[in-house]
Image (cartoon, rainbow, N blue to C red):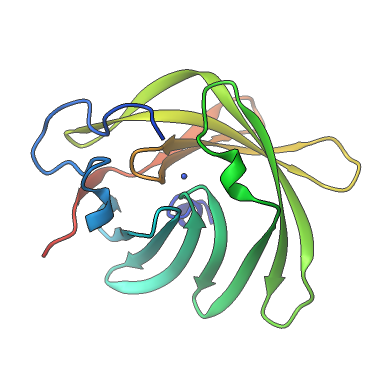
Length: 198
């Protein structure tokens, strides 16, 4: 499941590539499309549709297994997972959440519908860590925001889910950090990035 989450599972934080490496998608070129890879068999094509939506298509060994549409690459709006469709309708204006800045805390409510099943309300709390960082994918380096994501269930306290390593210039989550029961953490990230072949 974590392999799927990394794929979907996003401005103004500076230039996209800290290095001027040829072939590194940047804030200026990301709208032309690019591909991120994990291992030798998993590739995700990333397309920006308009100023707010990011579309991802995850393929494993050439077979499409997950398609998703996300708001700014950070909130899922729609996903088709091996033929099973889920929709997430925001309750409120997501545009007011952006741009994300270090230290910012926000909440977003969605009505989640799966197939014909009646929608359920889901509330997510996001907290952007105050420190910024960089993350390398091959020879490409990107400025990221670490966004701690929690789920709010009814009146219970927030349940921590994971930390998104979000690259605002690409409108994409490049990695997810999970907490293990023993207190250690596991980082699942993409290994490579390249422009979409034309």
